Length: 107
Image (cartoon, rainbow, N blue to C red):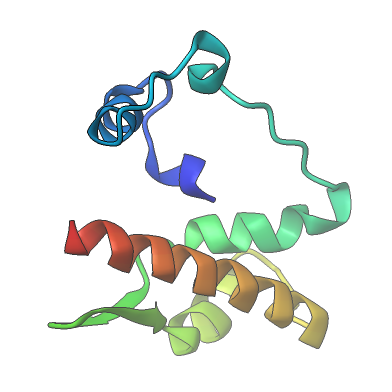
């Protein structure tokens, strides 16, 4: 998921992080990676991407997604039925993204 929060072709942060530890990144480390998405996961990934402005946050950082908005407004608006399996997938992406957002905010 970290590729969602990074501009395409922007390697400056990765290079700076590596340099701090004395690591020299080679071209293959910096090359864009292709990610393949299974067709059955497209609906939940699409819903997650549409939910990116629906984060709840406190002064301590990002807490999680606002399920009331997502389940009550976004999913019906885009005719998405959220079943338990989709909710599990959504929460898995949410937890990973939340950790990345909070980690980046502390830097």
